[in-house]
Amino acid sequence: MGGYSSEVEISLKSGSVVYKHLNREKYNPYKVHILKNKWVLVDENDNEYPINKHDFSSEINNKKISFDCVFNAIHGTPGENGTILAYFDLIGLKHTSAPFYQMALTFNKRDTLSVIKKYGIPTATSIYLNQGDEINLSKIIEKVGLPCFVKPNNAGSSFGISKVHNKEELIPALNKAYKEDSEILIESFLDGTEVSVGVIEYKNEVTVLPITEIVSENDFFDYEAKYEGKSQEITPARLTKEQEKKVTDVAKRVYQILNMRGFSRSEYIFVNDEPHFLEINTVPGITEASILPQQANQAGISLTELCGNAIEMALNN
Image 1 (cartoon, helix red, strand yellow):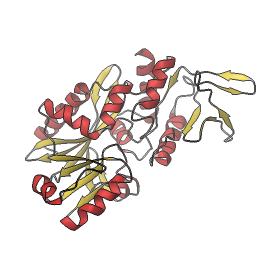
Image 2 (cartoon, one colour):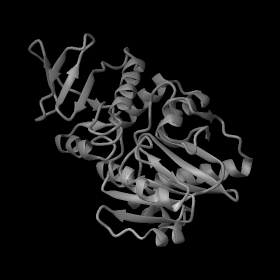
Image 3 (cartoon, rainbow, N blue to C red):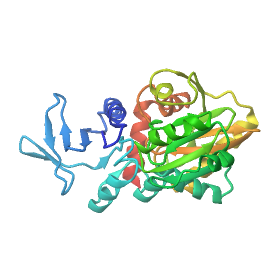
Image 4 (tube, rainbow, N blue to C red):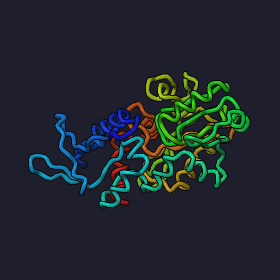
């Protein structure tokens, strides 16, 4: 848990929830904080013990602690973008996420959309910019229309995202996004019901969890809406049977197209009853209030079972 991005505090919460809910009759869990300035094992009394990067072990009172499996609860860099998972692969340590390449691909919104579009999955109209590129506001607006969304390409938890209503708001929105990333995605506004779909490997099968409808009190599903109660998250979503079947089928297909493993949560907006793919989160929040645990609970899967299953899938992989 932890990480090097703006999502560090959310990750520490997610990791602590996983630690709390793991079945102690089956597992002997340890909290490991991966931070920019230190990698440490943290005990019950908040004592810290350095992680040996040679084999990802630690030592407490002259006793070496080695691990069978890593539960990856790092949102953002280096857990969700695959960096640390490549290292785990090199040292032969199993983990609960997809392979590092799939994680790197899906963390990059632009690359994910490029793959998804090839399979005929509907998406918003989009424009890509890199820092330093010439900015032609009229051309951008001509292609994506107004309102539109400006997003950092590699960031989560809605950090750096703006909804732009007029031409004057576009440059400040680009500057805000560039604070999070040097690559930017500008997307057309899709007006319709927004849903979040959890897809996981559960007992060796790709399983689509009950769908959540997102009703934000703010202009869109931003950080406040996600983490500070400024939204309604309705599970199961208020969809017709046809809508539910369509988005369930698409979400499962996207999971398989992208060769995912472990947890995922993807966002869709219905336009004329067709679900349009927005993005996929491969280390979704795992606090008690997070969407994926809510969906699992609706499916009769407890947090203890959800987290334990992820470890079993990793160990058997």
